[in-house]
Image (cartoon, rainbow, N blue to C red; front, top):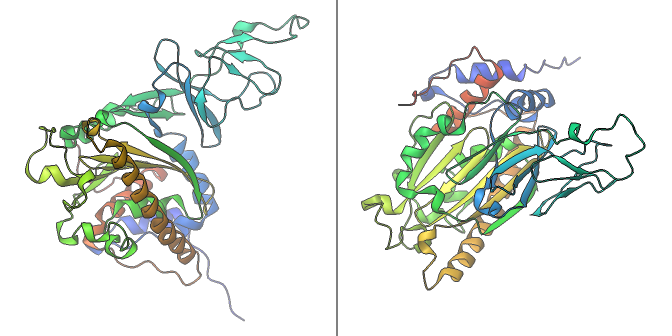
Length: 388
């Protein structure tokens, strides 16, 4: 009789994975991607406690502009109020608990689709039809609960953790690294949501290394970057990054002639920033695009996908064509990435899956694994470079 081998606890397996030197490291164990228990632990220890990016502030430019999302099971509204401040609230009516707004749009007030209870853009209850007969009802007691919301370099973050360290403090080193790009100087011109059949960490890791570019992206950007020009420094507590030099034939990735902030190779250097837990930014001197990821169980990932051009290109005579070229390129890249990452998830789900050793070009993946371990076990000390 064959006795099945016990499946190791994924947190224990991850701990063993990250306690070796990077020069001897292997990819994360399959159970980290496939375990329901690990997924639940991520929601509790990561997505309920760290900052989550909902997109760009430029998409919420006018009073009443809003976006919605679900963060660790909690429906959230993020909006621009009448005083031009960004606010976040629970997206649940205080009456019979219907969700309120859906998708993205603009609203003068927040109206419940169930009984038309209506809230102002500051979250206060404005009106509640046919409630005069309930003597205990008091409108002032029914404001929507606030959720922490911060803007940083044009990005909008929310957190369910009222004690979360301010984003600007967490990411001060990122700001210094990309100062010459002026990340607030990029406007989102497209936004989409997608659901892929892979684990969120598989997609995050795919972004964190450009080792796969020549093969996975042979039909698009694979030939525009050389492996020997990729630089993968050690990560930090709140993020990791690597850089690549883009070929000048991809004109929209280059610094605009009017950009006097970047010099030499900086003018064609792309930063690939992984802001933990799940904001992934490709920042070129000409354009940017991003993914903000949220797990939908072990086998699916909800993707917020957006991007656009640097405002340096606004006056370019080919400005509209630039946006078309960018979106066409990124759509093709996404098709390639989806195929690769869904194949990886099918592979890690196989009984015989065994992780192999990491390339030096996958240093960010090792740092990401250490971040995950530090959230699962607060006594774990990541082997990373401290912020300056």
